[in-house]
Image (cartoon, rainbow, N blue to C red; front, side, top):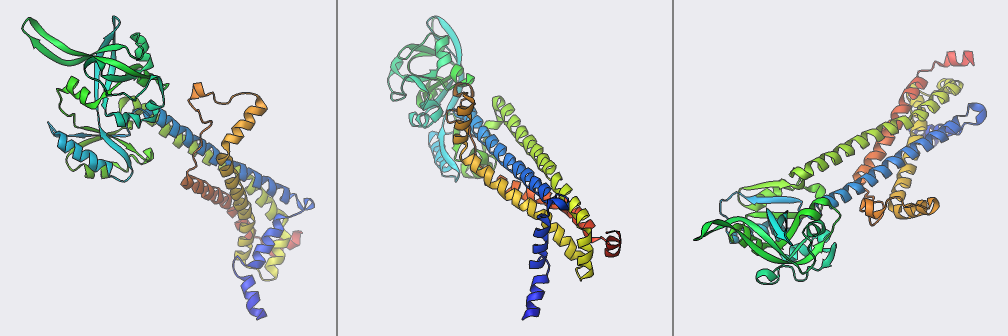
Length: 435
């Protein structure tokens, strides 16, 4: 039985090797200060991992908020029928099929038309978006940003009393307030018996004015009931366009194929990233994401250098111990594993501590922000400037967190391997002779 116990303890990475590895890490100051350097290495790894998790989570939060602000009044994906004259029945059937695709929050028909408008002897340009009242109310970016009037009567009223909604900047440029009339022009014309064709125009009532804090929606958007927009701009015909909003905007590329399959007919598909005004934002966000990950990977590599230094010193100070181990029967592989475990312990514990600290920081970032603002007596991110009404955003992506943890362990293990290899090559005769 004792023999079986000894075999179990002496196996690779067994109890004896682990005990020796831990003992080496607790080397006293008189033995070269390896323990102090190991503690510093642990702190460096912990802070590097925590910083990487915190910054990446804050970046993900800012990215989500940026996308929310950029496309909060738009759709995530757009599907257009390739049929020259789609029918209302076929478009309704396609809308229902697309709404049933897993990952699609809602799908609805819409229209977009650039046009001119006038009021109070002022002329301007805007983008009329045809949409059903219930779909507009589901746009929180618009429905929660009404500063005059309300959307309760949106799409209600006959003739010039028909209610529409528009952005604050556009309303100000035309001198409009809630309840005023505005004339909207159509690119279509009407022939008359008294002269050349006249442009079709119609008066509407401003039922709501919104301000989302973004230039394009506030200065150009006009929301109109879908049927009314169809009558004004397309002679009552359906446009064949459907707007989709997804549960998770990050899955937009993966949903292209399922959406195309669910359409049931040839369609044209594009996303918010494909639109010219959003392409630069999408590219900038992606470039920043890649660059910051690369930078913090380098930071973790730099943080591993103290581990390398501590292991080099440990091997140098323990050359006599290595020689003794070799003379009593320890193999080169056993010595390699002992020193590999010594360095790996620093990496594992530092990575684990950094992981816990970083995640707890992100989960309590609101309290952290409040504490910093209280101590500094300042506001870190004014809501009116950064549009961050809920404070600093942080979104933990667990796949990234585990990727960071694996990277931290990998780098610290790699920094340990070379000194451990050198330790396994120490000649016991030379080591004892010079000691």
